Length: 257
Image 1 (cartoon, one colour):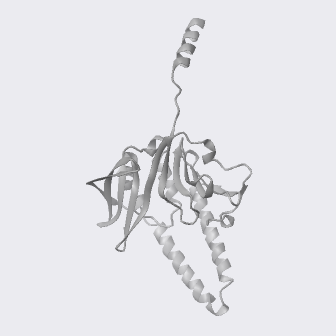
Image 2 (tube, one colour; image 1 turned 120 degrees about the vertical axis):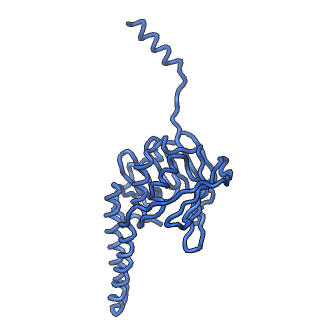
């Protein structure tokens, strides 16, 4: 028995060390306000969107269904589940509206209140709508982006082109996080249900990752994402952690600028 254990120990020591590397997808353009390069970091069930050294960043602890908004300048953060975020956002919006109304002249308050209620009602109807059903068409067009080969996919909603996604099969975030759980968390950040929450678009993320996204609305097109660099490397654990010295605050007290 002792001889067997010794043999196993020798075999284990002779094996190469395995490093589980994560994905880093950097935006092509720097943030116009801060000048910092924004990126998506994904590793071992967690994701972080932002810049690790500057500006607001969002951390998704996918395995535990928790979202963290972290502001290094304030040394403050907010954390909670997607459901808690939705409630906290509603409270923060209510507080902001109340503060705004305090500055409105008395003769205009009722008119402004009515307008605010109208906007809130419209947003609620958008956020509570059924999950959209989209049609995804893979075109024959290809393009190299950030050193990766991509294929253009068109996304249609109710017969209208709403997005073009240039997908690379070389980047599969599903190797690091649960894609469906991640989508549920990111959807919680949006005030409306859109094409990106459809099962058809979710299926694309099982195949690869879009390094370029162009969205269409009311005849206009807008490039919302374009990767400048894609890296597969080990990411420091602190990228996905809130420093212990930071103070937890309510969502309305956190600076999102």
